Image (cartoon, rainbow, N blue to C red; front, side):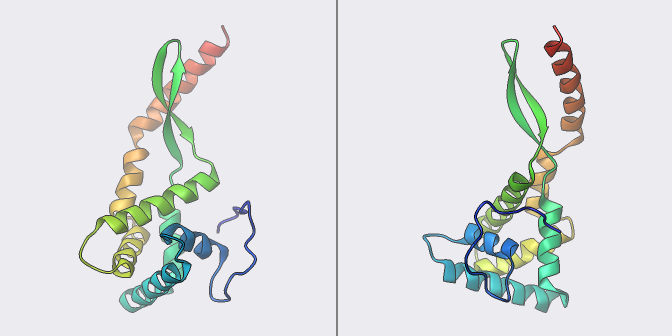
Length: 161
């Protein structure tokens, strides 16, 4: 599913893991405690399989795919004014944003262990609901797409002068 080659190939990937999970583990990690973040992801997968009776790796990949944004708005200065212009997101940035939103949504919930919060958020994201999906939809709205078309016309007209 993910054809993004990492810039740096890790030397060791455990047999039950894959490069996408290893990258996600690195995003979970706080203070260099990789073993703790591995335990969190393992417990998360156990809880997902207990709740849904489905393969947790498939649910994880589907959730990441659902969270990935296609476009984002960036400020662009044109003729003395600053416009928010929608731009397509590169694949590595899509992955980074989806990981960041997923972990941020999980950490913002209080009162239960991180593995519970992450499992709930992954299940919600695989069903196209939850906080991280709302964040994506806020970023990528129809208004932004219309603005994208309008700004592309404006940029083409501005550059031909």
